Each structure stands twice: as structure tokens, then as C-alpha cells.
Length: 514
Ligand SMILES: [Fe+2]
Ligand SMILES: [Fe+2]
Image (cartoon, rainbow, N blue to C red; front, side, top):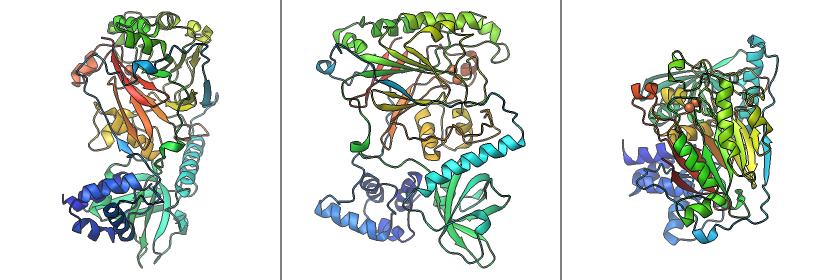
């Protein structure tokens, strides 16, 4: 692909609107990709990338003054998926790790879905669910300053130019790299819109969008009533300047774990023990000891036990075949963690709750030990909490395989890339009818709103972290050895690795308890 087209594709993949008249500027520039990156560093997605803005940016760059409309003072994308060469990387200086005398946790629940007890799951429930998804996401799209001239699908008429239509993507046909067709639906009426995509860059963009996502298309309608797309826009998250992001007012750390799988023969108790020793200030050197005492929050993003009857033949792989014993054993680990450490536990697909998302919290009857602990907060999947003022979204990420199977280029060992796609769609599991079961609740709790500061997931057992437009993303590893299922798929898990985040600086550290 030519360098100018690569640069435009890069902007589109970051959800910028690119005007056709910008193509000449990119074609004539000596380094189109550097120009695109400069554009992203300088402007939010609300600013259209056109000839005028690009020329101004080039002139300003040459003269070096900072434009007064600069809103994003850090690069919106900085993905760092670490390769672990040494046992740990601590990015908080030892002198900054104070003992937190008279420490008071600052913990609150921001969002905890209230789930229906009596869902029928019939057609009416399903229509209501999708209408709510459409309403929530179309409101997000309508707030974007770069979109206007909105038309409902049933208002689209012949010979209209530069109109914006919001719809749910119900069908997608990619014919070639120059040709695609999208079918958009509005769940409030039966009208559909057939969208013709003929620009290779937009076709490429269309391949990245999951079915049932709510998107906006901009375009023109010809005299025969055919809609030709000029832009495809996702709800996405806006670039947030550092000044408007949330940080703790003191140095305090959060540790991210998931997929502990207590009860499995493959559960690794040694790294779990070492992690708990670390939290008790018994790390192998002073830096680790001080960091452990400064870690006052622990997040568990699901699959804390292996469960019973989760997949055929699981009994052969269980060390404990009672779900009560599994939760008791997990609870015994948490009881050894200092009482001033606040812990959040959400369920995953192995936990003893319904598999349809959102999933309710782990019930007291299965986990009485956990329920009694005042510093353990059992919450639904997904939930959002505030940790020292930093908004943290926990989601088990059961939808990761669906997204990997449906978006070209996504890989199971790069979960952060997939989680970025969730943020772009502003939805945790867009696709209906695939492997991720969704409950037809009256409200779609899987829409990502409000925008978190931290997005924590699990499920794939491969640790990683990265950043997207100011949101810190963490996918935890596991405390389980490679399963026979993972072996058959050539998946190498990363047991024992734990990511920590300094809530004052939002800089991660990486520990390895294997
Ligand atoms: Fe798991
Ligand atoms: Fe899982």
C-alpha cells in the first residue's frame, strides 16, 4: 500500500474523519505517516482531517508554535505489550513508596448493573434490548462535534448529500478490497439502509467492525436512491487531555488478577502464595516489600474458580469437584491478604452464575467466606469502581474470542488490541448470536459509559497492558498452568505474572510470581 494511503488508513482506524481533499497533502508530503501521527497527537477526533487543517499543521510544525486548539497532549495510542525478560519491572521509585500511615481506602462503586429476575428472553425482550443499545450509542455518536445533518433511516431520500445516518450493522459483505455492502437497521422501525462502500480505505475499516455494532455512516444518495458512504464513524472514546484524567492524590497501587481457577488440577498455588506474601510486605527485597505494603487494591476480573460442569470432561481435570470447596479455598487465600486491602471480585464464564452477560455477582450460597469479608466486594460482570478517584471498569472479556474470530488481524496473544476495539465500539460484546451469550435485559449494560480511566479484563490467560486515548488497559494473566484445551490451540498462558498500577501516576509495573 502507498505511504499516503497507509497514513489515511491509520487516521481512519483511529476514528478520525478524513476529507477527500486531504489526499493531495498526504501524497505530496515527504513522510505521510509522520504527518498522520502528528495530526493525532495534536487534534482530537472532533477535528476533521482536511486540506486546510493539515496545511496549517505543517506550517505550525515548521514554525513550532503550539496551536491553541491542541487538546490532546499525549499520544492517544501507545501500546506496550511487554516481553518479560527479567522477573519484574517496578516503575515506582523506592522513595515514593511511603508506608501509608493512617491509611484510609477511598473505594466506591460507580456502576453495578441491576439485573432482572424474571427475564423471559422472548422477541419483545430482544427488541427492547437492541432499542436500548441503539439509543445509548446513538446518543454518544450525536454528541460528536464533527457529525451533523442526522437522518433516521426512514428519512433517507434520493439526491441527499452529506447526510449522517446512525444504524446497527446487521449485515456486512466484503466483495473485494474496493467494494463492500453494509446493511444498517434502526430497531425502532423495520426500514433498513443499504450502504455502498467503494473506497478501499473505508472497505478496510468496515472489515474491523463487529456485526450489531451501532455506527454512523456519512454519505450521499444518488438519484436512484443508492447510498454511497464517504465516512464510517464509530462511537469511540474522545482523546482526553492529561489535565482532565483522574489520578490518585497519593502514591497507592492496584494489582490486577483474573483467571485464578482454584479447583483445577492446573491451579498453581505457589505463585498465589508468593503474591499474598508480597501484599504482606514479604517480598524478596526492600523495593518489593515497600511496593507490596503500598498495594491497597486487588482486582479479580473473573474465573476465580474453575467451576463444575463448565465443559465436557471437566471432572477429569478438577482437583476439587465441589463448587463450595473451590470458593472456600479461594476465600482462604483472600483471608490472608491484609484487611485494609480492598478487593473486587467479578464472575467469569467459569464462575457459578448464569453465563449470559451481564452476569450477576457470585451468590453468598456458593461463597459464604467471600460474602462475609468486609474488604471483598462481590460485583456483577461488568462493573465500574472508583479506586482513590480512578475509575476502573472490570469485565471478564468472554467476548474476546468472538472478536478475534470476526476481526481480521486480531490475535489471542494480543488481548489489548481487541480491548481497544471494544473501546472504539463503546461496547464490550457487540455481536449477538455468537459464542458470547447475552441476556436481553431492558438496559444494555455492556455499553461502555461512562468512559473509564482503567479497563481491566481477563479470560485469555495472557498478561498484557497498553494504553488507548488515555485509558490504561490491562488484561491479566492467570494462576493456572496450560490446559489441554490451550495446548491443542497452541496457546501459551502467562501464569504468575501480575500487572500493578500506580494510581498517582497511572504508570504500570510488572511482577512475576512464578
Ligand atoms: Fe479463565
Ligand atoms: Fe474465562
